Amino acid sequence: MDYNFSHIRKVLVANRGEIAVRLIKACKKVGLKSVSIYTESDATSLHAALADENILLPGQNANGYLDT
Image (cartoon, rainbow, N blue to C red; front, side):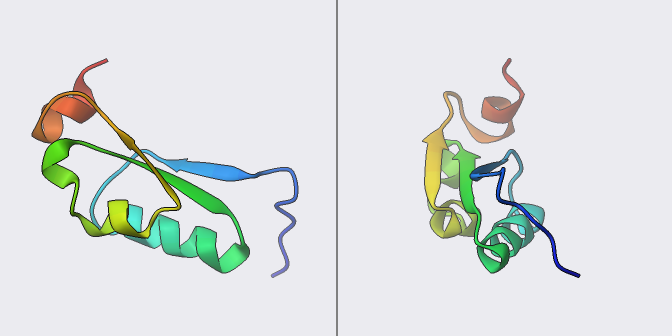
């Protein structure tokens, strides 16, 4: 299939672990930039390493993702 993503510049991957890694790899495959969110405890995780940009969340572990 041929998809046209010309109107999308970046994708925020608001997940972590294997799902986030798959999304980031899919973005790279179609030429989209990816932005991951992470906490200090996830700073060395694969999803943070693969993304084009990273945003550090306040908090630790899962609480950093859940604190609205």
